[in-house]
Length: 93
Image (spheres, one colour):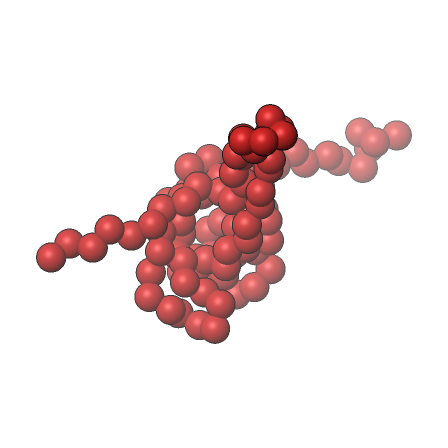
């Protein structure tokens, strides 16, 4: 029997915890009465075993068994890494 796990794609908001990242998943929905587009953002704490994710990365997370009080997701893959631009102090002035 194969179980289907939920999959979400989101952006890493924080990676300050050890082996844990906070991923924000934004969805848009059309309101039927007011004809407005509504944005909804949900934050998930996901397990990052190798601590590879950085802030701003786009990741795919998958539902898993409870790993701690709030962690029920794990990072399946990093889709894109955020470009890090390094500026030397001489270039600022």
